[in-house]
Length: 275
Length: 171
Image (cartoon, rainbow over all chains, first blue to last red; front, side, top):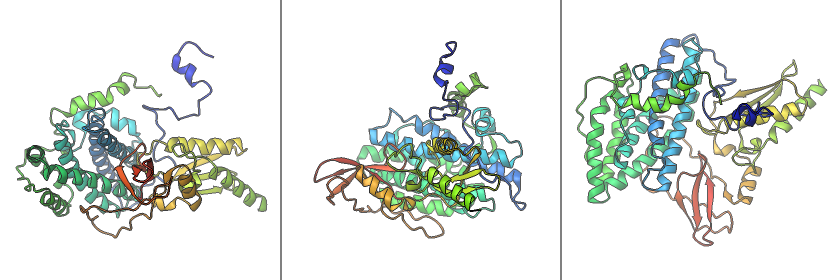
C-alpha cells in the first residue's frame, strides 16, 4: 500500500474501476460509435452546430444545478437537477461529436473546461442568473420549447451521430418542456403574487428571445407553444424588444464569466488531473 | 465454426447477466440496454450498449462491468460499443425485467407513448395514468413527484395501503 498520497491509496487495486470517477478524464461518451463524418456533410459547420447546442445545454445545466438546496420544495429541486443532468448528458455527446468533426480530436473536457467566455456560443438567456423561481420557469419553458423544436428537426440531419443524439434528446426535452409549461400555468393562473412574478419574468426574458430565432427557423413552432401556455396561464404574450448583440457570436453578458469560473476552476487548477 | 458459435452464445449469456448499477435487481438484458454481443473472427468479443438517458451516469460503469465480466470469463479481447440509434425505450424492458421490478416494489412502465413525425404536441390537460400499487395491487394511487432518485423513475404513493413506491416512467 502506498501511503504518500491519499488518492493513490484509495485507488489501489481499483485501476479499472470507474465507479467513483467524478471530474475530468471521463471516458468518451461516444466511445465505440462510428465517428466518420459523411461526405455530404460540411464538417466545420457540423462542429460549430454541435458546439452551439452543447454550450446552451452546459450553461443551462449549470444554472439548474444552482437550484440544488435552494428550490422552493425538495421535489422541484430533484426535478431541476434531473433536467440539468439530461442537458449535461446532451452537452457531453455534442462536444465529443464536435471534436471529431472539426478534426482536432478535442474531448469534451477541452470544450467545457478550457475555453473562455468569448469562445462560448450559448444564447445569453441561458447564462442569466436564476432570479426567482418564476424567472427560471419562464426561461426553461422558452429554452426547452426552442430546443425541442430544433432537435425534432435535427433527427433528420445527414450526420447520423447528430441525428441520433437529437432523437434521444427529443424524448427528454418533451418532459422538460412539459414540466416548465405546467408550472407556468400554475403560477400564471395562481395567486396575485405568483401572477405578478410571472409577468415580471416574461418581461425579463423577452429581450433575449430574438437570439434564439436567428440561426434556425423554428420560430413559428415555438411561438405557437408559448401562446398555448400563456393563454392557459392567463398571461399576455411577451412583447419582444430585442437587445443588440448575441451570445451566438460570443457577445455575452457579464454573468457568463463568473459562471464559467466556478464550473472550470478545479479543472484549470489541475489541468492534467484525472480523478 | 460450431465452437465459435458456442463461444459467442456463452459470451452473450455472460454479458446478459451483468446487473444494472442503479436497478441491481435487473440485468442489462432485462433493462434492454445490451443491444448485441458478437464474436469477431480474431476472437474479440464486441458488446454493444445503449444509454437509457443522455445523462445516465451509470453508463461508464455498465461498460466497465460488461468488460470485466467477459475478461473474468476468459475473453481477453473485449470491445464495448455505444449505440445511440434507435434511442432506448422503456418498452425494451423485458417481461422478466418487469416482473422483477414489481417484486422489488417498483411499478413497471406502461407502453411508451407513440410519436408521430413532426412537431411534438404539448398537452396541458391532466393525463390520468393508472398505475396499480406494486405492493398491494390497489389501483388507487397518485403521483407525488414526476422526478425521482434516477432519471428513469417517478415517485408515487398508494392511497389504499399508504405505501410510497417508485414507478419506471414510459419513455
